[in-house]
Length: 342
Image (cartoon, rainbow, N blue to C red; front, side, top):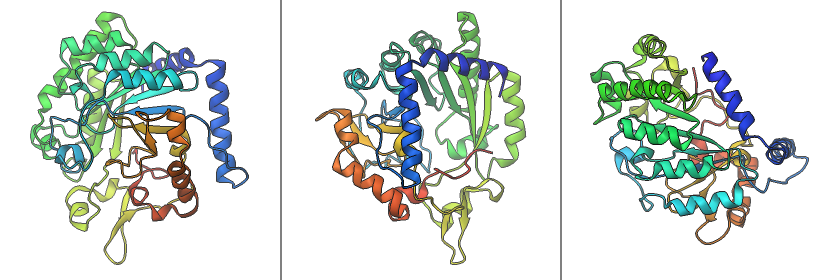
């Protein structure tokens, strides 16, 4: 973490905060603590962060990703900017930020700049996660002028051979050149933002390249470099043996040979208070682990966000998490309460 990352994060946070947002943040935190200690059950009217799915489309074929596998069981498409405008018209006084990623590659949305500007006009924090293949001069300028606060780029290998084992169909050179172009243009614009984070997902085949990744990140001037443990879409012993390094794993093998998370699941979940996920077509989901929208709370195409977030399915889901979290399929592969960063 660099000084630029720290100062920029502080500046963006101060620009975002209002007294109403600060009060709402305090209420969200307090209501979660009361729920977790079983003293009072009063979920907040709105979350602090909204994750939105610009598109389900992706240029890569990553083998542990439903976008890469083209394995959606729900409709696919891209978000109409007017849907986000409707959402933020309702939520912006309370919201702290918008995260422009879920499934798919967000830079494939032809109006990604408009989506980001919609959030920026309310002084919200904005974050985008990308595989980095579309960082042209034009696209970078669009992101800077839209007011993007933070950009995370995944680069999971320091040679083309290693990189493409997971990022199938990708070009390491294209990604590296795009990131260097972004840092150069950000300086030319005289902008502090977006803050640039580079992420390295640790797999069995690339674990030895972590020192080279850190050295490269320092050399090019990235603001933050982080190592993340890999998530498996398929919790099978075969997938575990193929992809997961024992030195950097969120999983463990049981005595019977099954693969599960290393720590037992707590009967609580901060994500259900802090944030919500919106699919491209307006379904409100509990979190980003509901990749196929199997636990949708409702749709903002049919009602307000608040109505969906406090619908009977939403309340039933939250109470199940706080009573029998292990009974919910998506929770059994969730990183909440699990160490995922090295």
